[in-house]
Structure formats: C-alpha cells, structure tokens
Image (cartoon, rainbow, N blue to C red; front, side, top):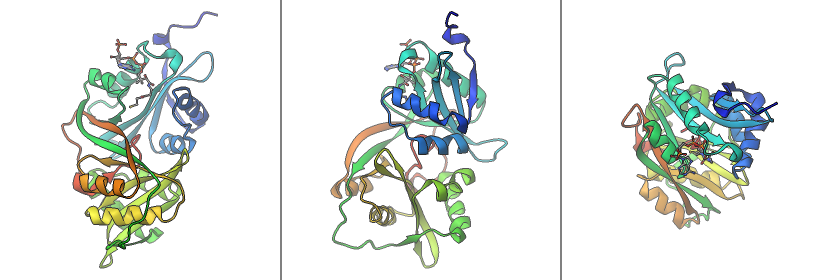
Length: 288
Ligand SMILES: CC(C)(COP(=O)(O)OP(=O)(O)OC[C@H]1O[C@@H](n2cnc3c(N)ncnc32)[C@H](O)[C@@H]1OP(=O)(O)O)[C@@H](O)C(=O)NCCC(=O)NCCS
C-alpha cells in the first residue's frame, strides 16, 4: 500500500496512552526520552499529534491551558517535535496552525529553541522575552540563606494556589495540584507565618530540574534553590528569566553554567500576564 501523503494524515488528540510514542519521538530528535515529563504534560495539558502509518508518531506537541477551564486565558505550547524522517515537509507548520486555530482567541506562549523559532515567527509569534538554561552541580555558599524554607504540606496548598495565581496571572490549579506527585521535593519560603515563595524540583535525564520557582524577591529565590539543592547529589537545571540577572549571576557563582537561551514568544498578546518580578523559572519550558 502506498504511504498516504503527509498532508492528508489526520491530526488527533494524544493521551497518556501515547506516552511511549512521544518519548520515542523525543529520542528520534536527539532529545532525552523524559517519560516523567511527558506523563505530566499529557495529563495536565492537551496533546496533539499525527500517527505514522508505519508506526509511531510523525509529530507531537502539547498545549497546557490556564485560567477558567471553559475559556482559558493563556495556552502554553511545548514539546513541538517532528520526526527526523518527516522534517522540513511542512508538518511542523501544519501542526502549529492547527494549534492556533483550535485555541481560537486564547493568547499563546512558548519557549522556542533556535530550531523552532523561524517556524513560530512564520505563524505570527513574536519574541517577548527569554530564559537562560543553567545547569551543573550546585556548590553551597558560606553564608546561610536569610529566608526560612521548609517542605510544603497539604495544608499549604490554598496559600500556594493563591500566590501562584497572583504571580502567574492565571489559575494553574490543575498544574499546581499535580506538583506533589510530579516533583520529588516541593518547598515553601515563609516569613511571619506567610508563604512568600514556593519551588519544586523534579527528575529528568540525570538532572533535577528546579521549577516552578516563585518568590517575593531574589533572596527568597536563592533560599529556595539552595534548599532544593541540599536534598540531591544530582546536577541541577533551571530556566531563569533573563530579567533576573542577579539570580543568574548567583547561580553561576554557585557552580551552574548557562547552556542555552530560549526565546519566550507570544501570540495574540504583547506581554504575559502576572508579575514577572516574582516569577523566576517555569515548571518546565514545555508548559510555562
Ligand atoms: C522545529 C521543527 C518542529 C520544525 O518542524 P518541520 O516539520 O521540520 O518544519 P516545517 O517543514 O513545517 O517548516 C516550516 C518552516 O519553519 C522553518 N524551519 C523549520 N525547521 C527549521 C530549521 N531546522 N532551521 C531553520 N528553519 C526551520 C522554515 O522556515 C520552514 O519553512 P521552509 O521549509 O519552507 O523553509 C522540527 O524541526 C523539530 O522537531 N525539531 C527538533 C525539535 C525542536 O527543536 N522543536 C522546537 C521546540 S521549541
């Protein structure tokens, strides 16, 4: 049977049952398999993809929606992947157009790799910011953090959700409530009995990713990162908003190296909602 033309293969919703095929696609493009992350994204967000008649997936991506469930105020696009065999044949363009059409008037955001950026620009996304990926073994400093941190408990959840919505600028309940299972460690920073920041760390590809990282100020962010680093022997990785220069410099002083720069791009909005000054790092660049 001849292979049907790529353009006629239907785009369908992906579910958690497609996890292995998504991880295979990551591997095909030289990315780590990241099954833990795919599992999180395919349950918290909506996956889209095309089946390869020869087996596996031709392409995939995930859109995580934020705000009211019936009229989201923001969609974060991530894990946009086209198999090597089908690259440069218009599949990525078709998939992104499908996402933009499906999301209708909902503003979109994504973190673009240099490979993806020309495609998103063609669709109409604009660069509105950036994030540095830093990674490496964290070396603790001499001075103890000035802000107190402790493990998050179930009772902290309402306060974490309130803080998160204020800082992120949209309700992320479906993502935040998954964090106790997704992260290895979830910690809060507290002052006078009030939660002023929170952060998690989760395992992937031999590193611990620090994210989300939400904090009242840089000192609080440092205390949270230090406390998460103290609980692991693995290298850390995090994606710090380029505007947080002080935290970036501090991370480098403590053994981390800037390895990549992602462009933050938006569609249908000039600027992301919320308070960037308290938003230091996303849960993952694949979901904001
Ligand atoms: C980026 C990616 C999704 C593009 O998918 P694709 O199906 O190959 O892209 P398309 O054929 O639809 O290309 C559309 C346009 O995007 C641009 N583009 C696509 N791949 C590009 C590349 N590697 N370098 C520069 N421009 C590229 C071109 O303008 C292209 O149009 P043209 O082929 O007519 O010149 C795919 O290459 C991929 O999976 N890369 C690895 C993973 C990755 O980096 N994903 C992006 C995460 S943000």
